[in-house]
Amino acid sequence: MSKIKEIWCMHHSHLDVGYTHPQPLLLELQSDYIEQAIDLCIETSDYPEESRFRWTVEANYPLRRWLETARPERVDLLKQFVREGQISLAALPMHTTPGADAGEALHMLEDLDQLRALFDAKMATAVNHDVNGQPWPLSQFLLDSGVNFYLTGINIHFGGIPFNRPSAFRWETPDGRELLTF
Image (cartoon, rainbow, N blue to C red):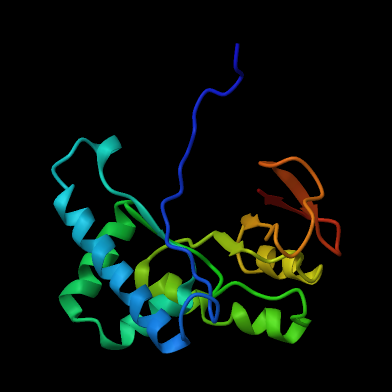
């Protein structure tokens, strides 16, 4: 008998800067995804709670770019769906590189409080896919920024998988704290 009692799916688009499309087109696509997510939230608003559309803005840089041109009523709708839990916002602006130094890692988190205030959202999860390894201090910076969960995925084409997937573990920070990581 399986010990699995519940499966959670995280519906999101994948941000792959410079890999799938030129950057301007990629940001346009990401803006379209936000618009489509809002529309799907509207379309499913009369569904039972457990059946409503849910989506995660995996990286907040495309969100910030979208905010520059979004109509105020669309921003209000996005805020509503964030409040209602249909749309989630992630803490990192984009997927990083293992080569990021401490200053770059801190820079990635500097607009987080502004976004939290704008959306009245905790933004306590960071997502970082297709990146094989992170600078050790990133774990500490995330915790210091109010992020308590880190979701990542190894790019199997550029490195080996160190343990069976999926896997959850507590990433020990340089100062001995732990960041729940999946």
